[in-house]
Length: 85
Image 1 (tube, rainbow, N blue to C red):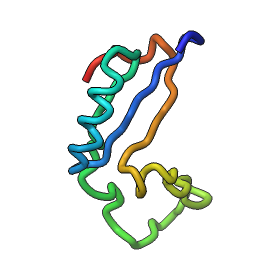
Image 2 (cartoon, rainbow, N blue to C red):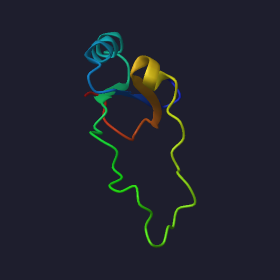
Image 3 (cartoon, one colour):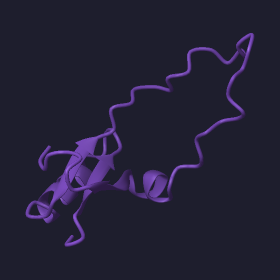
């Protein structure tokens, strides 16, 4: 990527085939490949707080690559993280 950006590839837990595919195919590219670190939804309670400050759920639907392919791509500035992983 000549415009100074790099890719972050986040692979869904358990998708070893997908992780190995990206690792082999993108080894010489400025890409970081990492596992999804989430274990569960971080929200602890379904009950509303006494004073709800949010105006709705900020999360949108996952990109199509998440349920179908087990990965998500993110474009990052070149100086945001080291290559590797």
